[in-house]
Length: 321
Image (tube, rainbow, N blue to C red; front, side, top):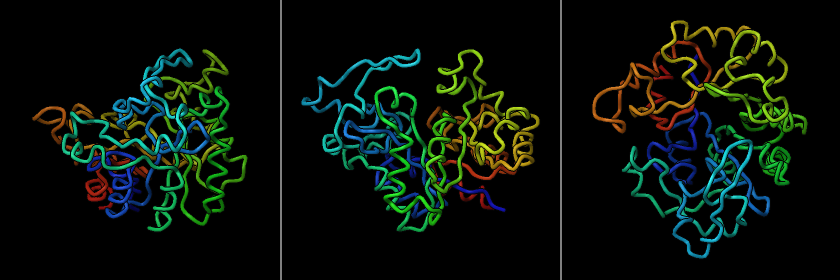
């Protein structure tokens, strides 16, 4: 069985992420699904952005009318300074234009800076439906948005229902680093596969805020007892590929999860040296392509079910062999 190839924010190896051209290219390259990250605007519109802080992916800093919106925010022990989607209406956000998030690593993509507006979740759902492909919706910072009065899981459930994506007609996955957000969407009757994202380090912020030091770490969740705790709560896990690359028993996590009926995805397949495990890096600096085929072939051989990729065409050539 071939591994699913999911266009991570579209095809951001070739176009600025979360743009119409990025998603369109991913769909043209034959992905099984595309993955939008979802945050909330000031007026409750679900906006597709990697983070709610938008200065690294848009030209907001070049808009003098928005200069006063630059602020510092603090949440759960972290501090961020910039411009935030939740401080703009959708009409205001629609005046911004997208930029390449990694210009030093992907300088060719900067040729497309300033050409495309931001998208809403509905835009991506409609693109995928027209192409007959799936969508993997990632809820970003649900507990933070709840702290400022926005029910992100509720908004996502309502949008999926309004767009015709709630009843299993289209292939749909809901994912989050916060397990409570997954449960909140599921409780609203959205027919989907629910996938828990696991970082290589740390604990989920929702559980850390609720349980303090007693909160389970992501690493523990990937252990056999942790996987046991997920049975019946989620349909699968999506792990930082560091869980799998370079480990002597790289396939053990996949086997353990499969034994419990859980699917396993991994993120993110990127060919640049900057993102490869050390043993697969080559010459030419961080932006040069290393032995991505070696790393991705190893991931494929673990038997995992899907991967998120920035260059869907390259990933398809390896994971669909």
